[in-house]
Length: 632
Image 1 (cartoon, one colour):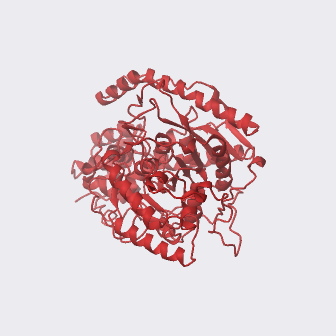
Image 2: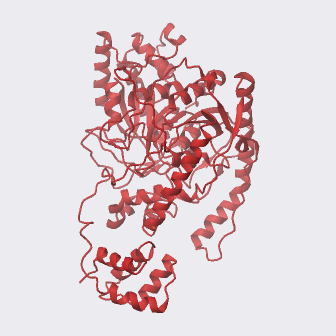
Image 3: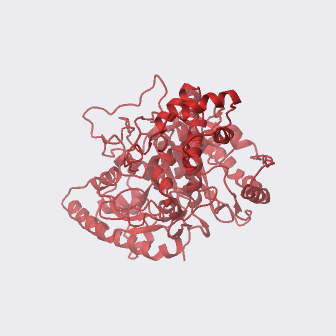
């Protein structure tokens, strides 16, 4: 007879051990040994892993109860749980007493009434070679299509040709949706000719990260073993962009199961330096947008997966407030942290895309009834602008902690790599600081902003990163249990297969307590946003704001902030990350001559439009978003 897990845990509860890791470990030890009886030695082994002290007299008392519980516990595992089945709880980033601004009753909320003035490009003759407008903004391309200076079909054919041309070099595409795209473009041209213009995205080709389901095409999640996975629906975001008249031309790469930039077909590359990966996990959307192969793209972020590749590839990324965009039809990694958002050339482009995709869909229950309305003429000067003073002004010299005496061989090798790479990392960080400081000069001197110093609340945010690893282990529970995780291309210590296995040893009580600490952190950060409306910050810095704001659910816009010169230090490796996560990839390096840097603007919860307006104002002054890579 096999052990009954539920009765087993109930017995542990009677003995006072239900709130520790010990019951699960002990059960695993006994089950794997296929033992008919639990022994004192098994309790000792489980107690050592769980770090729970067990006295000899306690073991004797436990044995009689634990061995009284027998039966199979396969009942729950016999129930099929697809990746789209959420747990029976909903995360809400709003602190007590705050609510998102609801939509105005009866308003035409999805019509972008306040876009910027018609761009100069629309007044000119369209070049014969449409590749000359491949890097134009959504606003510019949309005006050309609206005025019928260029057809959606011609624009779509141009981008399809560029996707085919540059994919062998950059590896940013999983599936070309050519027939769907050309049919959509043809329909767009007919509608526009008939005066049925749907808005700023009508007729514009876009690419989606291949964790978004699109009916009739594989949805691979970038992972080996999923190459032929078909999901018989369109994701809500895909449906809404269809309704806006946008044209889906490609499903773009992501690192396997949303980690890094390595997928089953290789490694997606940075168009500015093809020796580098594009970072991830929104690797393909950032790379393809940067290379002028789509008008815009949709990525996702859990712990930096829009921020990191947008920085690497020199594009503008927008991570909305958690709950602003429904995730129905998208792969789940973390129910309480996953967010979908645009990757574009400008902040206004991001806002125009957001205008089409925000709002509840009745299926993703975490999607809030909040309000987004883009206004390019918004008076940003009334906003209170904060900045993370220490992140700008103090050198980022993180001490490397000593290696534990009982470190494994793999840990020792990772430590040696980190120590060896640290001088180059420090040189890159110090070089990049001048871009951050120059941004402060622009804000103060050219825009007349009075910057208010603020600080990130002090909480163990890095320790809380395990939240999305634990939730990911649950979302892909079957992958670990069946052993199919061996099909993933990346199986090192810092990648998902190992992380998912390790997460199964994490106590449920500790996960719940992490979420409780997260509640305190959200409340503390809310007090910071009582002082300011927008926070300016280096994208990377000592405060680790990317991790912090993904945990608290706050929105961010990541904007290009210049190019490193030929005198920049060589690209440096960041080695094996301290913990696995969606934005990490140990094989990547960063920096190097003639590559982009970025700046980040943070906003209050569901204050995304105001944040975008300020980022838009900054881009009008700096124009770094108009830079693009020279592709061979």
